[in-house]
Image (cartoon, rainbow, N blue to C red):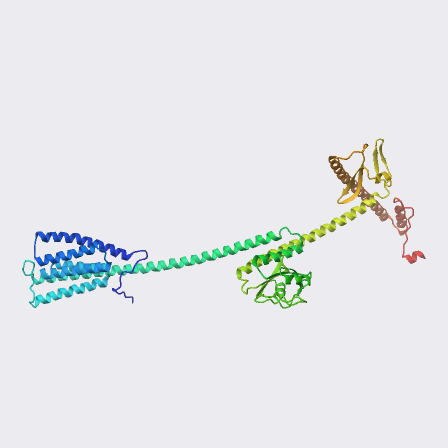
Length: 546
């Protein structure tokens, strides 16, 4: 069962200044009491009662004025005011009994005690008032003090009891109302406090989330900056060895690592060779052909074999090899696989001096750089392979074209000379064709020189640049025209050969016996150009010799 004590002071609501409210309320009460006391004091001057009472009223009024306009602590001012009200109530009780005068002061004392302090203070004031009234009643009943008014007339006992009951009932009602009001205020205060607590918890949660978002954004920015820096370092490099060295140097300089090494797998995927290193010891290992066999102990072998990063607090893969010793001051090592098109092509091995150098965010950045490095290496490999294929294709094409042109110009007079008397064929061995005077313009086709044009002036004058450019353009068109002519000739010859083969095949198919077929074959082959004799023999070489 839930119980609430009335001794508790009103709980301050969040954002509600209870102390300021009490101070303002007390100031208003004191100002009101000063105004009302002044009116009562003026009334006593025109309607004198008792000199002692007048002096007491005047002294009380002076005290009220003092605590109204002189700065005292709130509790002291309130206490003096309540004592003054009690004194006025006792004075009224002595002078007039339990009448309206004493009842008014006592009731005001009880209400102000509850409002300014707490319900408990109001209850204490009520008990003090009842004790005072009870003491007065006992004195009256025992005859030690008469029940008189200010005019000296006796007050009926029933009227006194009725006034006392009224004061008691009003006091209890006011204190109960004040208690329930304060209880409700306390409930509202607790609810408000819970709400404020929940809001503060939500605020802290939002602050934590905001901090996490800021940290994540900072991590992304760091990743972006690292990636941009990494890309800027290797973007323009086309040589694979230079790219590998730039990768390890960029990572080592960017993150201040002790050693960065890059391994590449061989074609079988069984051995990882150290291809580039940032440290001097690692570069010496590259020159000595350091390698790691998959399946051995160490982070590099595990990363290459499993396709995922491996981390340890001390290096296990940089074992001594030859005259190279293990890198000094290494307390952390991480190996990240280089994966391109779903296949491990190498491992990026990083060693640091700090044991906690590879946190979660740092590993994410390094994995991002490893993926970028793998993509760059694979792209450069593909580009080199494509370029090698293109170069080989161009070489074969040039060789084939050179052989075709040699066969085409064989036994043909393809040297012509223009003179004022006209165009005439000349011998390729003509010494005039080999002289140095004149402008020699080569006929180039797909990088291969298939001939040249020799130009001479009638006067021995130099050739201008425009004339040379015009000659070059003409040579290009002549080369293309000659190539088209050669291709057309080869196409015609091939068509004639195919037609001849088709006709020979048709005639052979019409032969009904072997003799007729052999005769037809000999006759058709003898009809070919530049064929002097044809023999068709059945059987192997030994039988033919017999």
